[in-house]
Length: 366
Image (cartoon, rainbow, N blue to C red; front, side, top):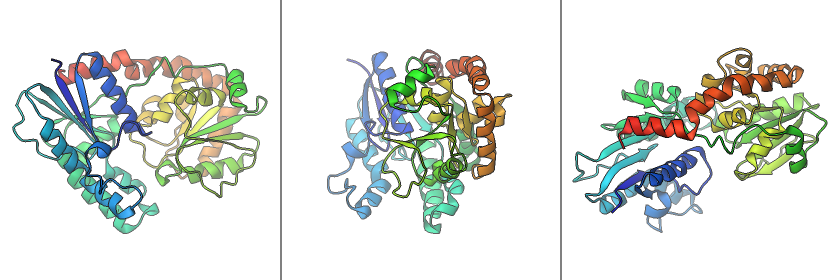
């Protein structure tokens, strides 16, 4: 019988999102080593009456109780063949009873709600700020990681976990499918997507959530009408998106993302809080420069010249982003060459599947 590994998380891995993507990849890797993986999340643990997204009240209550019901479900499934329990985010605080000391307890931090709360404080209510900072973070997240092997998706997250929770973590970064995200011919990508082949092209991939800095993107786009802008948005786009001559892609599938990155001259990521930043890594893996605010991936990969000119210290500094776009467009080939020659080898060492899994097995002992 295969030994089992439990993964405790917030949302179903079928949903889009960085944490969900991580859980999917983690499941695949564990199964490839012979483990039987069981994933517990909101959709398969919350009672039917509480698992309702149509009711804001039930949705809020469910979000607060998901960790309890996930833990309770994992408790019922415990057996002597369980090798490890890997929890994520603010799910993991439920104390599993009769857990053998031989079972590895691991908690993965994808950022902290406290860090997020501070970053978007001006864009949420005071009650929402206090809720994220004290309940979601200082209670649920802190207790979820206590007494476990703590892994983090970036040095930034590791430092937050130590500063806010007093927990010592190890940075393992995240993995990326280098065989899927790689440099492609720009003209061919544009033809496949129906995008102009004779104009500079800027790309934003993300959502309109205040955390992602979409309002900064639209201001930059309006200031640079000579650039053809492409917005690959997750979820419902804003009705008042007034950017002339732009293309909008909704919920772009995984197979389309490398084409979008490959078609662009640059990607812009003015996130106000980015614990890692898959978009930064994906764009760089596709050989395209990224103009980004400080985050886990951008601080790692944009630290040396000339790419350090594209790391914008203030995520709200519209003029600095505009200047960086102009800088890239003055020498797009030079910046692409810098990405391929200087960043790509390091990115493969840190995020390539073979290297990432070797690091994960060594740290966890699985």
